[in-house]
Length: 72
Image 1 (spheres, helix red, strand yellow):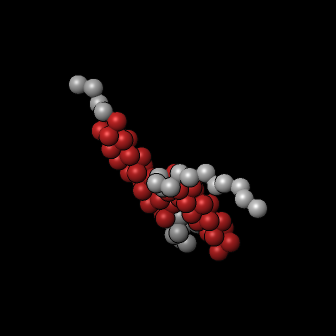
Image 2: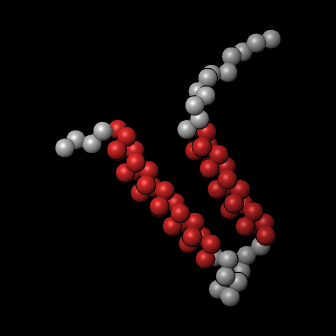
């Protein structure tokens, strides 16, 4: 049976979300100071990059896909 677009979205979104969550869990393992040494600045850079990409991805799902119009 052919998969419709909603089914394909659910299947792929579930897989990709679980992959992201797993990678975040692995990233969290780096917080173990017994095994790793890092600065607060390095941690801030990591989470800043993640937050930027999260905002970009979330914006793509926004229902307002209006183009900004120029006006004086």
